[in-house]
Length: 387
Image: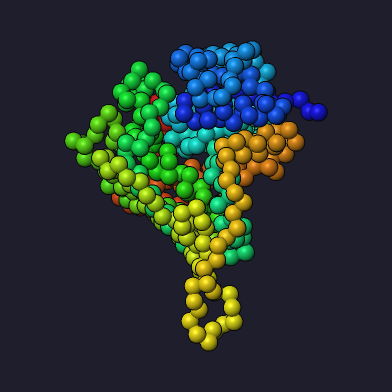
C-alpha cells in the first residue's frame, strides 16, 4: 500500500472548506493525510467552526497556523491547495512550487497576468504537478457534451448567466479589516474579484474551452454600475457582453448579469456544431440533429431529431477533481488531470483580456499579444510591482 499524500490548505473560506470536506473523505480512504491548515484569520482555524462544515472533522495533530512561511518550512507537505482571494497572493504559490510541493490553485489563479505567468514559470521549472480548480470539467453532463462533440466541428457557443448581486454568499475573509467590503462579500467588488467575468464567468469560459479548444481573441463591453447604486462595496458591472474567438474558428458568446434587487437567477447554454445544436433542458442534455437518409422525403419529426445524451449520474465534482489531482501525484504523471495550471492559463488570459477590451472601448484583444505587447503592460502588472 502506498503512503498517503500529505496535503495542506491555504485559505479556509468557502472554497477552502469545500476542499477540506473532500480531502477529509479521501483521508478516510487512506489516499491523503491532512497535515496543515493555514488562514490569515485565527477564527477560521477553530476546530468548532471547521466541524460545522466538515462532518467528523478532528484537528488532532494537524498543524494550524496564520503564518504561511514557517508552515511551509516546518511541515512536510506533498501538495498544497490555494483557496485565497485571487488578489491577495503574495508569492506563496511560487515558494511552494520552488520547494517541490504540488499545487492545486483555485480559480482565478490571479487577477494579474504577470503574476500568473510567474506562477506558471515556477511550476514548470520546478517540475511539480499543478492544476487549477475547474471542477466543472468533471460534471457528468459536461463530460457527455465533450464526448459527443469530439468528432464534430463546433461553430458557436452561447452562455447566458443571470445572477442577482445578492446571490454572492458571505465570505470568511475579514475584508473589513483590509480596506475591503464591510460585509465581506468580496466577490461583488471589482477590486477584489476582478469583475464577475473573472471571478465567476471563468468557469463558463473554461467549459467552452473544454469543448472547443483554446481561445485566440476576446472582445467585450460592460454596462458599469451607477455610483449611487453601490452598496457594501458591491460595484461589479450590471451586465457583461463578451465575445470569444477560438483558434478552431468557432465563436463564443458569454452574457452575464449581476443585478441588485432582482433576486432571480436563470441561464441558458447552447452549443452549435455544423449540423445541429445542444441544449440543456433541466437536468437533461439534448442534441438536436437529423442522421437519417438525406435529403429526407419529408420533414423529420421530433423523435427523429431530438436525442438525449447519456449522462452517467450525479457526482461531487469537487471530490472528483481532488481524486484526479491526488492520483496524478501518486503516479507521478499528470494523466488524470482534465486541466493543468499551464493549460488553464488560456482561460485566465481570456477573462482578464475581456476586462482590458472593455476598458479600451471594446477593442479586440489577441491573447498572444496580451502576454507580451507593451500596450497591455499596465494591465498585466500587479499594483506595486516595478515596471
